Amino acid sequence: MLEITPQQGYQRAVVLSAGIHGNETAPIELLNQLVVDLLAGSRRLAVRLLVILGNPAAMRAGKRYLHSDMNRMFGGRHRDFPASGETARALQLEQRVVEFFEQESAARAHYDLHTAIRESCLPRFGILPFQQRPYDPSQLALLDAAELDALVIHRAPGGTFSHFSSEQATAASCTLELGKARPFGDNDLQQFSAINRALQSLVSGEALPARSGAAMRIFQVEKSLIKRSEDFRLHLADDTANFYRFAAGNAGV
Image 1 (cartoon, rainbow, N blue to C red):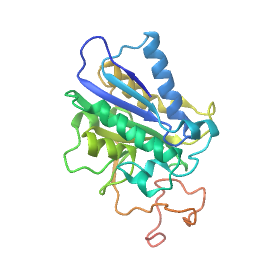
Image 2 (cartoon, one colour):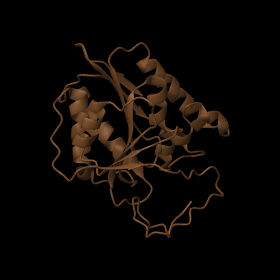
Image 3 (cartoon, helix red, strand yellow):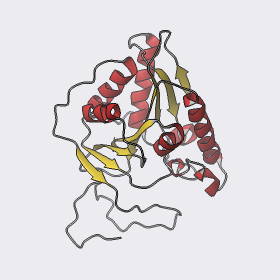
Image 4 (spheres, rainbow, N blue to C red):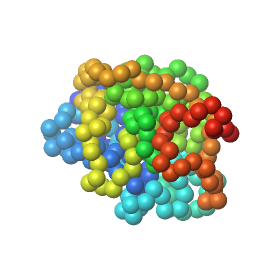
C-alpha cells in the first residue's frame, strides 16, 4: 500500500486497487506505471491517493488466491472463512481504507481493477455495487469516458472490495474489469488505453477524454450464483464468454 498526498490542496481522495486476485496482472501493470510516472514527476498529482496491491502472496504465486477468494470477504465476511493470510489481509485492507477516508471532507472515490476468468463478449466493463443513495454523476462520467463496453449494476449487498468502500466509507466505488487474466508480460495494455487515460485524468485533475466508441450498455443483476466451496460446479463450457446471449430456455437458475 502506498499513500501519496499532493503538496498543494486537493478536492478528491482516491483509492486505486488491483491484485485482489493475484493472477489478474493487467491492472497491476497499469497501476505500477501510474505510480512510476507520479514518483518521477512526469504526471501531476491532484488528489490524495492510496494505491493498493491486494494479495501480494497470490501475485507472487501467479494464482487467483491461495486459500479463499478475497473478493468475497469484505464487510466483515472474512470471519465466515477459515483463517488464513487472505482473511487477515482482507481485514487489514478494510481498516486501511476506513482510516484513509476517515474525517476526509474531499470527494471520495475507489476503483478496484480486475480481469475476468473468462473471455468476454464485452471485454471492458464496470460493476457498480448496490447502494441506496444515487450514484455519483462524476463517477458515471468517468466510466463513460473510459470507453467501457458495459456497466453492470448490483441490486443486493456483496462481499466485494468496492461494495465495502461504498457502504462503509460512502465512496463512489466501482469494480473495473479489464479483459481476461493473463500472466505478467502477456497483456496488451493498449486495449485498455481509454480506461488508463480516464484514471490518469482523475489522478491529475484533468478534463476527461471524450468518448468515441459506441454507447455503454447497462445491465442489472437479477440473480447471483456464488461459489462457496470447491464442490461447486458451473455447468457451462469453459469457453463460454461473459455476456454471452443464451437462446430462450437454454439457461436458468
